[in-house]
Image (tube, rainbow, N blue to C red; front, side):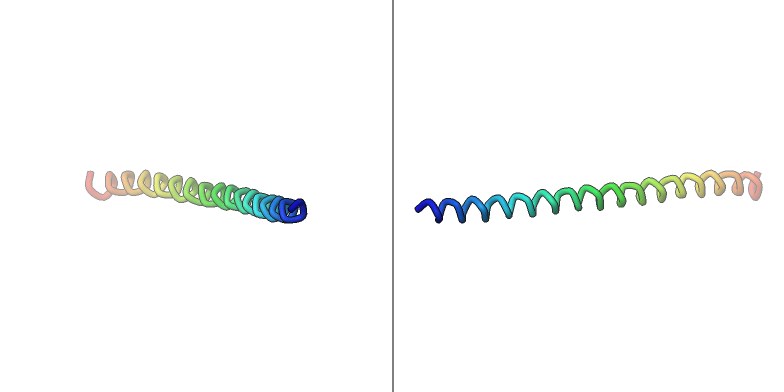
Amino acid sequence: MFSSDSSEYRALRRNYLLLEEEGFALERELEEVEGEVKALEDEKVELLDKLVVMEGLVDP
């Protein structure tokens, strides 16, 4: 019975470690995506500012 418990423990520990690694990888991926979203939002604001200026010049 001990070897069965030991095998189960090793399997659970291995699964836990794999899930932990996957969690870290997903956190890194999320940080990258959040950075991309921030860059796109900044670009959108910049373009909106230019559009407002151009509209003021075209149709004062």
